Image (cartoon, rainbow, N blue to C red; front, top):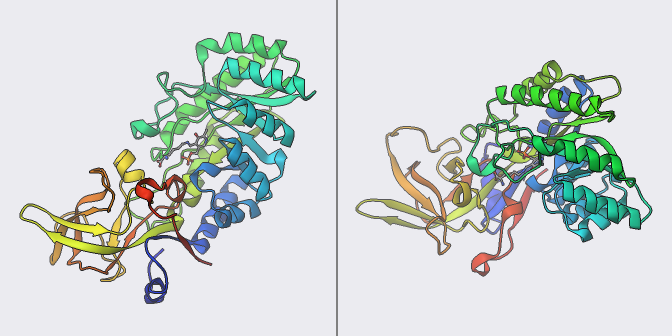
Length: 392
Ligand code: LLP
């Protein structure tokens, strides 16, 4: 997404701040993903949590991808937006009875189950409805995703999934539960993974666990390897993630038997680059030690920097479409801390960001905000609901 004069002229008609979605770029990204996944007949489920905006999800659905939901609300949104129930998977460490009952009523494809107790609860609830629930066991494979500690999920100390030492008990419960049908195993080791070698390690573990279940008489029909493929936040114009090499690794390193399906749950990689937050400068404060740009967007609209110290490229697009926070000093550029209006010190989008001299009213783009952006917004400080606009 590179901003043209036409875009900037359009911004004058809109009230900042807002998420600006480029649906053409989204489409190109989805096409690239489908192209390489289809080479190996891999099934992609879109992780709705990354972005459940109906227009965005509509594009994903039109590709024939399935949906990965993490709450009853996301299962409902997937159904409402037209995903066939048979293509919806439901994950999460804390599924409530109400959510499980709703998903059972919808006859979703499967529950990705995260504890032995959850297996027992789903079995009981399914029995009361006279149904058989399809389940995949989410296993914690103890694989280090080498990503930010707040978004790593596959280590022994994480709360997600069933640990390997609990699998014998898990197998016993599965065998005793008449209202459960085991369909396979599920993994998700973390998010924003940029070192693809990590996935080779995951494949080795998936192969071991699949063999473990097979040896005990279980038919492992589905190998669900989760999501996590990262995007390049530093080069948002490098827009399409490396789906080619990503899928190739699974094709090379995963043992896929006859009749087995490989499922993926991608979120960020599909939608991350397709939006920027567009905001305007409210105030510029030139201090003795620091210069501040105060934006009209806050952590209430884009929480990632405050929550994970996440990096998003910041550009003053009123000055030049290409100007940005280049590494190192740039002649004529000033260092600013770029902050929001919320009454929290962590409401900061970047420190010492190199930008051309900036003034009240300038348009600032915060890039790569299509994933975990709009969906994580809140009304804290009684802020207005988040706004959106689309390039179609
Ligand atoms: N499957 C499961 C079971 C997950 O927990 C997640 C993400 C995904 C798939 C999709 O992961 P992705 O492909 O998007 O990496 N709010 C954080 C990210 C949290 C990810 C949670 N789980 C952030 O803003 O970085």
